[in-house]
Length: 380
Image (cartoon, rainbow, N blue to C red; front, side, top):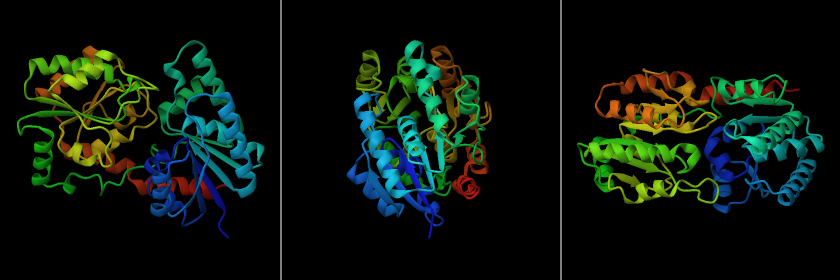
């Protein structure tokens, strides 16, 4: 009989997106169950694509004492019922509640992967609260996996835990299928057709951003800089692939105005497949304030697209400055403008095959999956 592994996340798209293919792979060796908040369609995808069982337990991303306690009790009761060998969580809120519930339920192996830390960008009471929550999480976990060296160093520097910290493979929670994310997947005809559909001219230079359109992703800075850039260059486009989260992390009203009214900005909303949008783009602009190990930077590199990133956890481990992109300071509009201007004027050339090779050699999915499996199999 296979031992049970329960993977938990706050929302199901984190399991279906961040761990695509990994759960099915692990299911060859363990009985895998996915636990997250309810979303009928996403849970169905998990069950059919990953061939695992799922359980819906509502977990709110925002702090809510009553709702969080209710989720904690439900997780505890479910873990007591299933008696898993391992509970392995990702995402902050699911991590905290899952680790506490698993400890109370007597689960022998309680693992958490930190895909990013929120508290380094916060101040005052908010930062203290978040640090306390992560310390509780780590106290209840038996093994902690930072997604990269930046996250690992923050956990150490902020004294979140004194437990050993292990990075699986070269970092990143799932790696990337480099046969799927490959320039060869798209013909010139397909690329030209999408450009025509989006209103991108053959002579346009395209910057792309992929992710949530929120303040913490640096969208305010990106919009301001591009607004200036588009006044000086008529053959430039900014392609925004992602949706707003106005209730959690809204952008400035001026940013919203630029996105909606600047004719050089193309906003697609959320899409199922980002590859075509990378295929029509020249540069990924990703001025985020904080990340764990951003998949989009890896995906862009695999598609041969260089990146402008900020000097933050994950991004500065994927991008080798001057080889497959440029690293700039966080929240620095001048540096962002200069980098985008240099790219636009081809003062900083990057080769697509070099960008791709730096990803395929370090972040192929099978390398990460084998690392996770090895970590599980070492547990007694």
